[in-house]
Image 1 (spheres, rainbow, N blue to C red):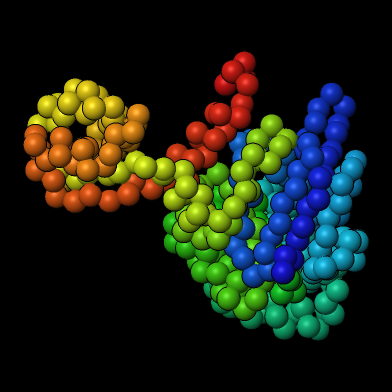
Image 2: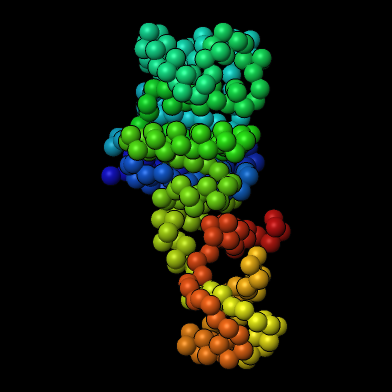
Length: 311
């Protein structure tokens, strides 16, 4: 089952289309990547899911029913632009936000104390937010976002501004919440995080959904018939022979002195013929499918779906 379904959602502002007939399905229990360049429409979609704004057309299904305002209590949203009241004390503010999500003061206080101890920030309870560094404030807002154990967690660039140690701490806590049953949506530009964390993705560009699916399947499909050869020898000797049989090659030097050849046979050229040509001029150490990274797929797909005047 899907915990979230977006059906043909469009949203227009004066002189601008933010979303144009966007549909997607988020499987229950998945880690889902919502990707796209700046201004693509991701934040508008997230605001619609959080009932902050309404679509002009289309609708959203949440947990098996049409999305309503009360569903917000089952959603945790950490926006990229963090928002805490600077003059309020950290503890009181955290309790305030927890109560907005339907928790009692007593329940919120107990759980917040546990989270503050887990993050090693118990000394911040009576400090004002303006006394905290950006990273400290982000930790507090993360706790507020996940405290009520929502069914759906939405993180917009959650690791932005964190050093590697604290970014890893947040990642481990997010994965722990996922293991406990939460569905997670990441909106991020960090494709390494997408490869490491996400099961499924949707890529939005110019207000439209241009790619959706399973991460592993997309990478395998986009790899096509390209192969990676790990070789030693003078690679300048291989370009012309490969070209003569109808195969393109990208040459990538490796740190250990070997070279990675990314070879794409064309015009009916067989992999066996490619291997024969490469083996006649270079020493082959390994051959494997050349699966593209999500960053390569992101860039290529966006470029293919962006008018030339916008590039």
